[in-house]
Image (tube, rainbow, N blue to C red; front, side, top):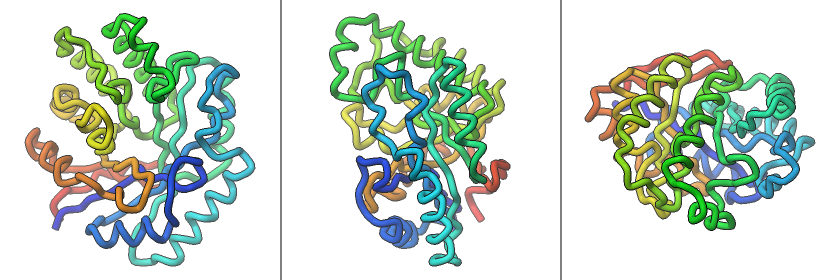
Length: 273
């Protein structure tokens, strides 16, 4: 039996997902997942005022309701381990870091996914900002993006890094060889001690490939950086989607354990049980 988790699942509270929590849980059972976790977006109130995606998450007053939603679901599905997670955006300025830390400390999470969706005011995964790719040096964009992810990894705020090369979402990939950039990045992530996710949602985006790219995944797994799984589902039918492809990649690079979390403690579980 393969032990599979889906730790990256959203709810309607983020304003861009659909379906009931029960539908997500039912789909997890149907596709044979061993454990799941919801990780909807932490309120984006720490975001600088000129970030236009501030409404792509629940409001602060909804956080207690979200937490109770997950606790209620846990009681309804006693045979399916359901973890309480959250996905928090990383903004590198001190004010935003302090505000994020305060919100995270208010609840007893099982894990926190740290994600970089923004470089300054630029929301890199929004189609509204595609023009930014045309006016910037693409290799420098990747350098800046990975530098920000490294800062997120070293911040101590997070347990898992989400979709660590999200910047490629719309198919913008430098023509230059990225091997050295990937290798240096992977070494920094290894030093930070944080885990990362294989996020299958990239297969449903214009880039058409898993996050992270196989070259980067290889560097991370060769360094034995802890890895977990996430579908980044925004609808029930996306739960556990394309995990067969993720599992194939894990086996290709000799990874036989997966990171699970309880009360922000990482526990490595064998993939085959």
